[in-house]
Length: 401
Image 1 (cartoon, rainbow, N blue to C red):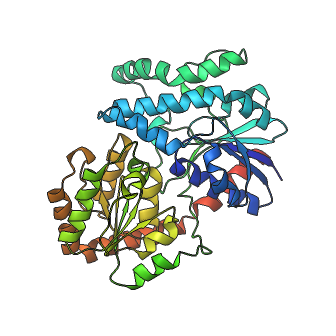
Image 2: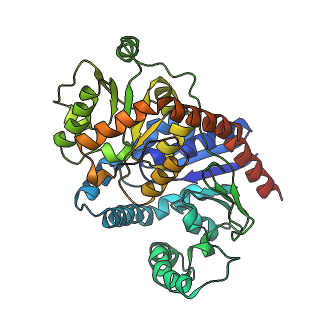
Image 3: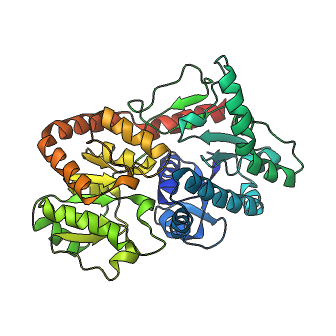
C-alpha cells in the first residue's frame, strides 16, 4: 500500500482524469489525496477521494474565460492562461510542500505541480503527460532547427519552475526533462490516437484513456422528460470554451438558429451567463454538470471544442462529432478526429457562422451511418485498452522495483 498525492490545476477537464486514476488506485488498496483548486472540492470528495485545497478560492473556469476574452489571438490567449496558472502554482508551493510530507509517492500531473517539492523531500515521483509533443526525443539526432527551437522554447518553459526551485535553494534546470520522473511517465491516450515514438525514452508509456462509466448517475426528471419527448438531440459541449466572462448571445444564437433550421433538438452545456435570461425553444434544454459518460450516450452527435477530455469522451462513448477547435492543440485533435473518420470537417472557432454550422450538420446527416459505425468501432477498441488498469500496473511495478 502506498500513500499517494496527486496535484492538478485548471478546468474540470484538467482534474477529471486524475479523479479516475485516484479511484483506480484506491480500489487496489492505496491511499490517495488530490490537491487542487477549492472550487473542485465537491467534485473530488463526491468521488470518495481525500482532498486538500491548493491555491486561492476562485472560479478557475470563469477566470480562464476572462483571460481568453482579452485577446482573440489563440497563442497569446493560451500563454496568458498558462502564466496565470503558473502564478497559482508558484504561490501555492508551501501548501504543496506541506501536503507532500509523509507521502510515499507524488504523481506529477501535466502542470508539473509537486515535482520540485517532492525532490526537496526526497519522495519518489511518477509523471503524467497529456501533450506528447512535450516529451523529449532523447534518442533522436538533433538538427540545427531542433537545437534552435530548444534554445528558444526551453528557457520559457523552465522559467516558472526555476523560480520555485529557487525557493528551496535547488540548482536551475535547463529543460523540462530534468524535472521528470526517472522511472515512469504515463500517457493516458489511446494508441489509436498517438503511437509510441521510437525516439522517446522507454519510461514513457502510452496506456490508454482513463474514464469511468458513472453507472450510478441519476439525471433530473426534466432531463428524462426531454429525452423521452423526441429524437436523440445534438449535444453542444464546448467545455471551458463556453464559460464566458461576458454574455455571448450572438454566439449562442448561431447554434440555436442552426439547430432550428436543420430540425435538430439539442442539449446545451455551458453558456451559463447568456442562458440566465435567454429563452430556449422547447426543442432545446440547458444541462449542467452532467457526466459525459452518461450524457454522450443520449445524443445524436456532439459539437465540441476538441479539448483533451471531451475528445476522449466522444470517442470512448461512440458519438459522431462536429469539431469546433479554438486554440493550439485543439486544432491537432480536430484534424486527427477527421482523419479517423469519426467527425465531419472541423470548423475553426474564429470562422464559426450559422451557414457553416448548418452545412456541417447536413453533412453529418448525409454520412451519419458511416461516421457512426467508425466511431462505434473505435469506441470498442479504446475501451478494450483498459487504460486505468495499465496505469495502475505500471505505477505499482515502477514503485516496487
